[in-house]
Image 1 (cartoon, rainbow, N blue to C red):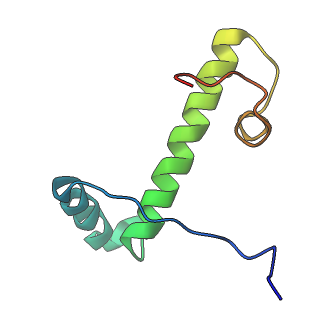
Image 2 (image 1 turned 90 degrees about the vertical axis):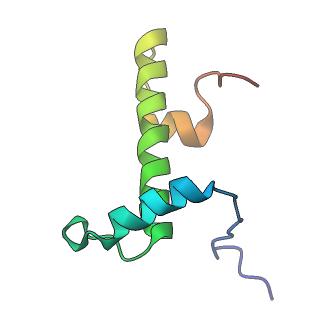
Length: 79
């Protein structure tokens, strides 16, 4: 039986220079990251929220960043 609530993951390619920067940040224990995946997921979430806020401001639409990301209440660039 397939668990439909289980998170699915994909792989992405990241240039080696960027991986080295990410690893350097992970090594700084005071930042609290346990591994590079944790840092990358947080960075992507933060960037998506920032884009959503900017789009919401630009279009003067009342929607939360989460609504914008999850439900597509605003048009996406480049599609």
